[in-house]
Image (cartoon, rainbow, N blue to C red; front, side, top):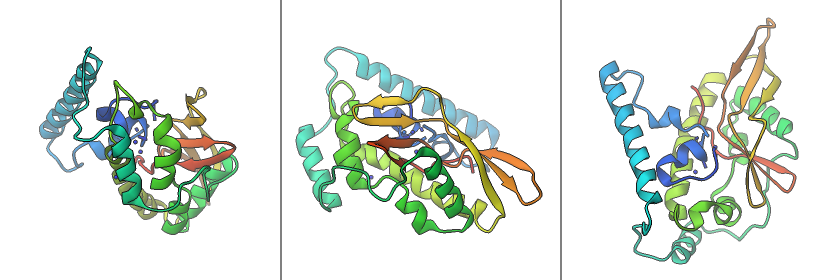
Length: 234
């Protein structure tokens, strides 16, 4: 069930671009492309086909009279999704950080420590998505309407694999946070602020510095910050 939501996150768009927008909420490209071992011709063809499908999906949705292909009304889709994920309704983000920098520092610390559980605590939960993020997104209404289950899947699947890669790549390394940078102008969706295209500069023990994309979009809401997706460059 890195959306992209942030790309992984430009603001919410039709589902074909949900991972780019939410999970990668902007940077889902790493998980949406073929494997690195694919022949160049196969990889290029697959990428071209994927781009063409996404473009056509956006064109189709922009046509007057477009109807989302769903058996249930969106209100029922939301009810079923909430019932499936369970838990108590939430009104605020939990277990995140109170500033963007402290969140990024915590992600770096957890990654180099190989602490997957800490990374999970710093990320958006399914319940937070259902109660706080999805209702404020254009996915909740026409013409970009999509079920929350499908949107969450496009965010969560690449985030899980991205989190594993992050731990494998950075776990055990002597790296320290130096700084980070996101797009200067965040995306606003209701009370949600989406910080996209974030990169992090790290310092090694010998003083060498390197910059990486460690996650997708950062969600800010009411002074709290969480990672939307761990889609990354690794």
